[in-house]
Structures are given as C-alpha cells and as structure tokens.
Length: 259
Image 1 (cartoon, rainbow, N blue to C red):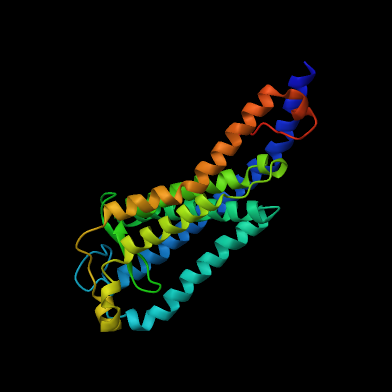
Image 2 (cartoon, rainbow, N blue to C red):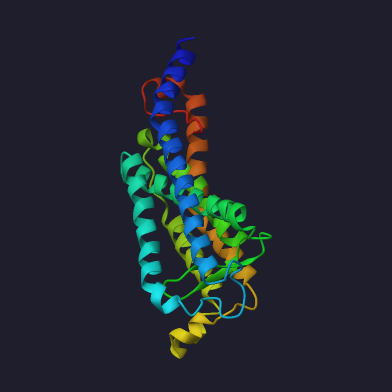
C-alpha cells in the first residue's frame, strides 16, 4: 500500500511539471502554424503560385522578397527556440520542447494551408520546403514524417523521468542521427545542388524530377536513433522500478508517465 501511494505521489509530482508546459508549447506552435500558413497564402496569391510545383516556381518578385523571406524563416526558428527555452528547466528539456514546437508547427502549417488554399491535394504533392542555402524540394509527407519524429523525440527528451535518470545519447545514436540528417538534406536538395554554379536564376527555376526515397528513408531511420535510445532507457527504468520498489522509494528510479 505504501509503495502504491509513493508511486502515485511521484507521478503527481511529474505530471504538473510537464503536462501544462507541453500543452502551452503545443498551443504556441499551432498558433504560429496558422500565421505561417496565412503569410504563405499572401505570398503565393500575390505571385500566383498557390501550387508551388510549376514553371518558374520562385516568381519574378523573388529578388525583391528574397531577403525578407530568408530573414523571416530565420526569425521563425528563433521564436520556436525561444518557447523551448522558456518551457524547459535544463538544456535537455529546452531542446526537447523546441523539437516539439518545431514538429507541431510544421505539421499544422500544412493542415492550415489546406484549409486556406485547398492545397496540398495529397501528401505526395511537391513543395518548396526551405530556401537556405538552396531551395529544398520534397513531397509533403517527407517533412511531415520528420516533424512527427521531432515531436516524439522532443516529448521523450522533456520527460521528467530523465531529471532523476540523467541521459546522454550514445555515440552510435548521435552518429546515426547526424548521418541520417545529412541523407535527408541531400534528398531534399539533390536537384538544386548540381546547379549552384549556374547562379541564382538557375536555382530559382529548378523543378525536381524525382525524389530519392531510398536515401530519405535511410535518413529517417538514422534520425530516429536518439528517440529509440530514449525509449529503451525509459523501458529499462520501468523494469528496474517494478523489480526494485525500494530503490524507487529512495528516488533513484522513477516510473515515467506519458504527457
């Protein structure tokens, strides 16, 4: 009976620390997604590019708008990082909440863009994802899957379980994640990279012909390595706490609860 009471007390202590923070971060990210979708609606309406995959995908107005748009993208990253910093209590949790905010922002951006414009028509529609250092192209589902992975990884990183059970990613997980990210980036920029030497005008007119699904999926698996590492650590913590309730009462092991 005492064990059960102690476990409930620990769970109650963890829940207030994460649930409201995660919820507030999610609300902020979804609100930012609407703003992003609205801005893209204005830009694409002005340039007659609601559907991005068409001849001259970046319109003639791009030279005048390009710098402002690049700075806007950078400012968006700063705002997402800022809410992560405010939500977390240490670097691990702050980075985790940043990943949650980034992932939800990206997912709901497409949801709201569909509401506002009727596009994308399917998850396989091509989109211009980013512009630094060259245009990134990919089917809508590709960034959406990465965004889902970011939400999952960030939620695990921010979990109070790791306040009592410090976690550092293994070298293998970090290497797999880094290589996976590079592979995904290459898949997104594969059509634009060979044309860097041809100048800005050539890059502005690039239209992808095929997506490197094999390279992308290998990259996605690699980027999932830290999440797998975190999940295994939590699973082992559960097993140890169930096998050793005395250690749990002493605070050396805690039973995690999902947000």
